[in-house]
Image: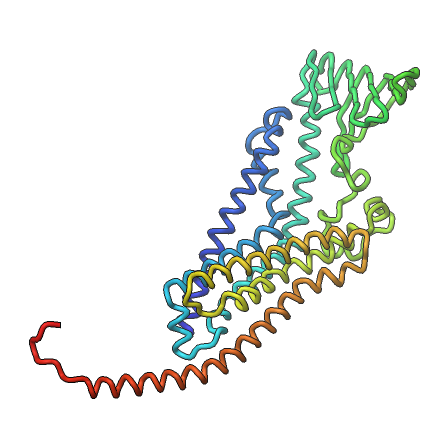
Length: 398
């Protein structure tokens, strides 16, 4: 049976690789189209777009990889059954685990891959993406904003400069911010300089005024300043303070032992808990999918209707299990008791699959004894009929 196991593994692994590459390509194209404004409105080249969208892909592997394995394993077992290979193996006396072992091995490899992505590749890619975002925000002021033009990098935010000197200093800077519906702010400064520090970009304005309006019917507040610093990270939603890493950007040691002074940890401690347990729960889903597939589709089936029903039921159960896991991950942020539910969902699916397999083995044992008896009786009657049937003359028409 080693030859058959290698054959099943090659088929399943090839299908998994093809589906994985296809789904990843679709997701990458969707991300590239969504971030196309990086090239069109923020002055970046195509290479920067490719790097930023590619770095976002590992963050989606937790969803892509398990479903790729699910589709590949269902396709492999369905093809084996359609070609009667499972029927032949089952008729030879092999158990369901003959076809299950290579699928479990592939599921284990996918789980190891997911663990590597969650603990190493994802934090690294998110940190690289953070650095690129700082570069994009910096280049927005140094390259995109043209003298004498009004530039709006996002809704509710507008820049204008009178001129730019040879050193890159902005002259006659105007920045109008209406993203906060509760108030609008306008910054006017004679000079503006871009400063990068600790992974964050700052706009340092000198000699100017801030015009702040909180009431449409009331007078505006005017604040004069000699120097004012604006954190460009405010142009995008942030979970923490300047230079503070998000939970998804941290490695395991930084998640389990965060700095008590971290603003991210102070504001959202549940995010750290959710991210930490999600990295351990996600690799369990390929194994859970493998057991579900073996329990519902691993048996040889002779009718097309029952096989299609098994495929649909297995996919629906597995997909529901994974989507529920994603919802529980979000619930862990506010409710620590959901941690047990998060682990219990894939483990419960594995236990349930083993129970189904045990029951089906008992049923097959009973049916197998009766089937052998009926096959023996049929063989006996066939032998008697062949002996009693008159021999046909040689050359007679059939």
